[in-house]
Image (cartoon, rainbow, N blue to C red; front, side, top):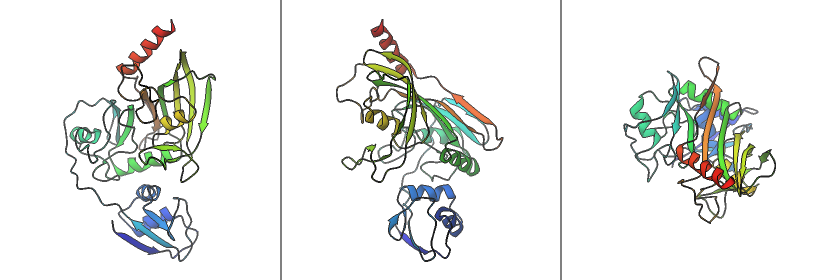
Length: 305
């Protein structure tokens, strides 16, 4: 990974804006992504995208190398819930990885998207074409995919501004007593297990999840969730933190195996709302939970009565 050093010749300008002006091929959202992943440092310190430069600041940029993996188009029966010339919204099944990575070069959503359409935004690189946001492999539900860079940047800005609507359903272990609430707890990398995230003050980003109880069962609760922020594993980490881990979660759930017929966490992204980048109108797309999620609920209803 090559590191390039820049010297700031201005003061009071945001670093993401300044760097976009220095490197024509970089978009502001890509610079922000590099900053968020620690690839851009100022005076050997990690900074945030809104950091305002001081003249003479030393900016170290280490652009990650593109992995030598060629994503190939694969014909798949994708559940497309909305599509036009700028974007599409797809209902991802549980068990499907969103984009290729070592160990998952084929069978990903990106492989299927490449066969479905040739016009995908290139902002996130060759391995993540069009991918604006992601949901975990074992979470089912909706995500939006951009077909061009202007749509991509608009959608990313909406997510940063917290104007998108993202509603989930989950089944959690334990009976939540109150009908609704908000979990406001920062999330960062777990220092004891780098594969996990955790609630921590150290190197963390703010994370806010709102929830409302749909139904209660003996030792389980069916909840509706709305994301105000979109941190990695946010819902799963937050509900573990308050003592109600998600049923079937292999990473954050209880060690005792559940008896429900579901592989992976009982978590579904059921509603996605945003302003269409071209028309300016609000677009809301919904998808009901998959069959295995509903089977879990049916078993819980039998336990209840």
